[in-house]
Length: 388
Image (cartoon, rainbow, N blue to C red):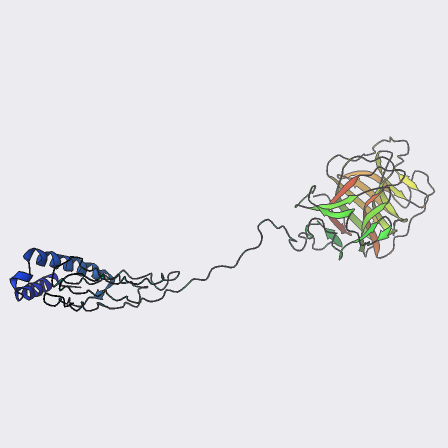
């Protein structure tokens, strides 16, 4: 810090040694006051300015500039910047004192996000007079460099859904899928399902059986099957003689004809089916084309139709007892025990090999209309899964 009183006394003494004709009192004290104000301002950057230098005597001789101010650097400060010295601009005034530069405040502490880039003091402007002195600006102090804090990595696209990973809630089941692990427009997981489109297994085409987000029972996706009079199904394999299937389903409209939605057995020609016949749900097998219950008339006690919204389809097939049951939303829609209960009485039990196929989709038999079927939250086990 500058001590104002000693500086003022020193200046007064220096001026008293000059001839009175070149030290007008008004200029003297004005410059002393300006110097003191500059010195106090310079103290803010913790710098120590050098003493001023006086110009030479009158005439055309240029006085030597003031000594450069020195700055004591505080290592905890950031970049301290000294601005250039301000110079007297009084024409014809001899022995004008150059003003020292003021030091800028230091930069941010080292633990900040990085010190500001240093700026440099402006050079002093020479005083134009018959014998004036050229002031020299203060030097720029170099501060410590702050520690830069690294920025985080860029995130992914905010609106990209992407595969969310393994299907949750599938632990312990023989087969399970909620169709959330595949992106919209893709085919179902080939590790769980094969596809049959128009009787062609796993064709290269990717339409007709795709992951869709226009309808879903849970999550944000389901499997969509665009059904026609041909066979379009997904096929999974399970190793069990006693099979319970649960699948949530929805249709774009109630179909005509006699389409097949679910099949469990050796293949599409030798299985137990969940079929929609004459507007009602029934069990069916191609061996003798038996129905349970008898829906051929289009009406029967306790028979169920297809709901217009999402419905829970359950099927049970046990090869050892030649028994099968189908439920819609928890309500029994058809049952066969010990291969009895078929409407025609002469139907043979199909082959149920191990492993056996579990088929879901649409097969538009008997002139069935073309519709879309959505399938979601499929689970297969050796015990009844239920709709919850």
